[in-house]
Image (cartoon, rainbow, N blue to C red; front, side, top):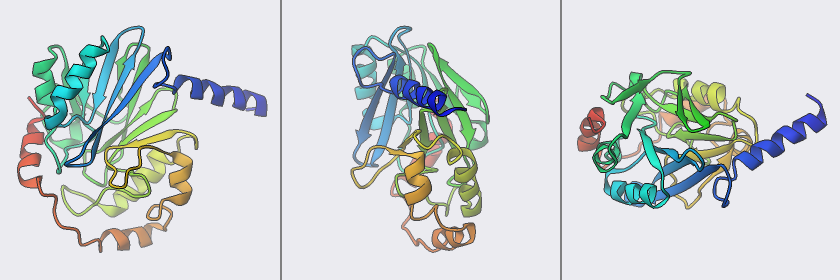
Length: 252
């Protein structure tokens, strides 16, 4: 691809990804739940009025449903990047609050849902689509959702801003996570925006290039990464004992 063609393509990506600007075709809202420091993402097609929610939280499901209504959208899917251990998903509540909404999760998660997805599947809303890229390692059923123009990636707990999800429970594996991130996320364009499921330091978004070059864990060799992850010695999530069983039902 020539330099001019590449510049045109990058400009088109930027234009498509300006979801917060009035009149842009893609609507994007990032919401925060403070107890588990979880980000929930609303994506919508302004023209078709169809939308998806990524990683909803039970305590803020009412807030999210009201926003969907306020914006005049029809929520098609409440999508989970994986079976969370630190909060209960809002998928079930949203199915009740917004009839017609379906819960979605990876088939490999072992959780129930209205719709199970596999690596390479796409979830469509209006003219847009989210491609599911299996990115296991934090859990066996982790998925990264990539917008169809590769301008945005919703990475769940697989890749955080300057960090990553832990690998010491729910069939986690440090070696698997390392390869997932390098092969399924770091192969995206460098200017692809990275939106994680959590942040604990007040950060909201990163890019693939930033994480490829600045992430203190994932710039290590695989062997060094495994050593770091196997020696984090973190306490288990406070809600894991009731969050995981609830999330295995995924609101169904």
